[in-house]
Length: 387
Image (cartoon, rainbow, N blue to C red; front, side, top):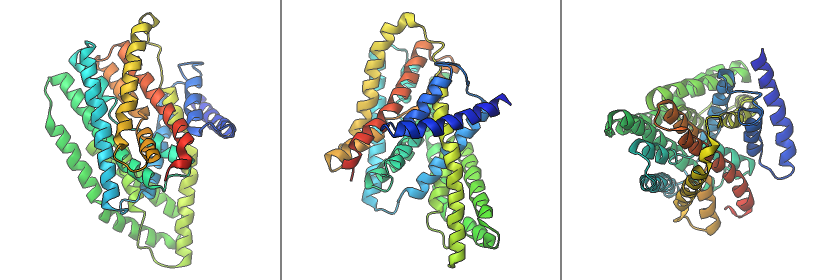
């Protein structure tokens, strides 16, 4: 019963403070994360991350990626999508190799160096997408490039995590892990035509029902394919993204009644998304638990923090250097900065496996927090200049 009370409290606070602070120019995403920090172990310790809130958060991020799939335009042209690939590759490997070399210079051991560098690879597509949506920029070419890059970055991030974890145990780099993830991710995308046919037939048959029936089919498809994606590539959000993309252009029966039912179903799902979405960002804040951090080593940690935070930011900023237009370059670089939940996953696995000590765990957690907070503010400042 207490968990239900906490859920209602989180929902109430996100709605009240999210709208209120937004009127002062503070992005809702920032408010949600800050609420999690304040209510969680870092400050008042009123709410601890638990399974119920985690499930709500997972549904929230899956809805965000489903919407990302609906919004992205992979048919916008080979040139645009290729730019997204280059942005992803540059934004992943530049910070990784610089951080790896720097960690070795600072005398971190091999496992620590790989985990620290790996935590800087991926981009939090949830933070980036939410920021573009709030700024009404999700249909711009810049957003399209970033979404392509962020999806690829997450796949690269998962590969890095699996490789680093395996290396810590076996002291060898098993490239079969990377090939298997790439292979399965490709298969998941190649299934899009078949998914379209299944959804198309299921939705056409259900048009004699009502919009709730259609929305239930889509919701099940999101969750089911996310489960398949997690089992194959350890990345559930990829499945949600693919379902959204599959729904972009269905050959539905052409009557106004059926068209209206489909629109109503998508609106119902949007209502569900608005309910679950804040929990994802609040959970990020709740997960920032620095209780194991020792302030006796704060001086050394501060120096490392400044060094690796600079690498985390600049390493992603260079990813947009070949894009035309100064503000477009800047927007793409800034959009790739947030690590959020991806950094936390690296930190948690490193800590629980005994590879990271308390200080390194705190270092990755703080970098994840700061990079998450930078992007919404920075993009808001330059949003009028994004083309």
